[in-house]
Amino acid sequence: MGIENTQTLSMFQVDAFSAELFGGNPAAVCPLNAPLSAEIMQAIAAENNLAETAFVRLDTHPFELRWFTPTTEVDLCGHATLATAHVLFNQGYITGESIHFQTLRSGVLSVQREKQHAGYVMDFPADTLNPSSVLSSWHEAIGAPILEAAEGSSDLILRLDTPESVREAAPDLSVLKRWPYRGVILTAKSSGTFDFVSRFFGPAVGVDEDPVTGSAHTSLAVFWAGKLKKSRMSAFQASSRGGNIVCELKGDRVLLSGEARLYLKGEIYVPHH
Image (cartoon, rainbow, N blue to C red):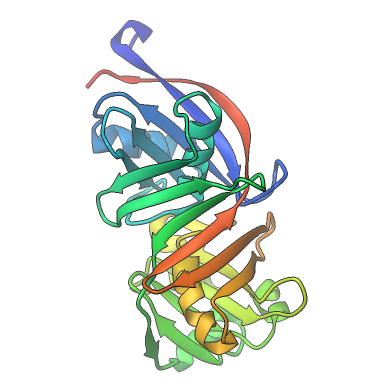
C-alpha cells in the first residue's frame, strides 16, 4: 500500500498522572475530524502497544471519546482522558477552561483545567462495589495474604496488609488472565503523604501491569472513603513508573486530579476508510 492510499492523522503521546516526563502512564491521543472505523482504531492501538490509545472526535458536540488497549475497547479510561484533555487544552484545539466528552459506555465526562495548579480535574461516575469472599486459590495467585475483596463493575479489588506487600507482590499473570475481570487491583492503607497505594494488573485486556489507572480509582475512592472516613484522598499507584492521583468522592461521582506532560507529537498514516 503506497502512501497515496493512506490518510494522515495527528497523534500525540502524553505521560499522564505525572508532573515529570517518563513518569505516570503514557497514552496516545488521536484527534479526529471525521469517523474512523473501530477496526482501524483497534489496529492503531495495537501498533502503539501502549496501555491505552484515545480517539477524540472534534466534529461532534460534546466531543466523542473512545479508548482502546492493544487488544480491546474499554468502557472507561482515566489516564487517556487526562492525556486527551492535556492535548486539547495545550495544542490549540480548544479555548476555555473545561471540556465535555461524550462516551459510548460511561456517559458524559468532563475535565476542568485547575486555575491555581498545572493539573486537571476529571469528573467520572463512581463505581458500585459488592463485597466478595476471598477464595483460597487467590492467595497463591497473588503471592500475598489477602485481607478483603470487593467486586466493582469491571475489576476485582484485593486489600493487602501493608503498602510493602502491594509493592512486592508478583502475581501469576497467567492465572489472573483467566479470572472474569478486566483487571485485578491490589491496594493497602498507607500513611504520611498518601492515604492508600495500589497496583493494577490487566492481562485479560492485554495490559500486564498498568502504570497508573484512573478508572480504577473510581472504585478505589469508593472502597477507601468508608474505611478512612474521608471523601478526599491522596493516592499513589506503586508501579515502576509511579503516579499520584487525588480522589474526591462526591455522591455518585468521583473527581480525579492529576498532571500530565507531552512527550511526543507526530503523524501516522492509516488506510482510507
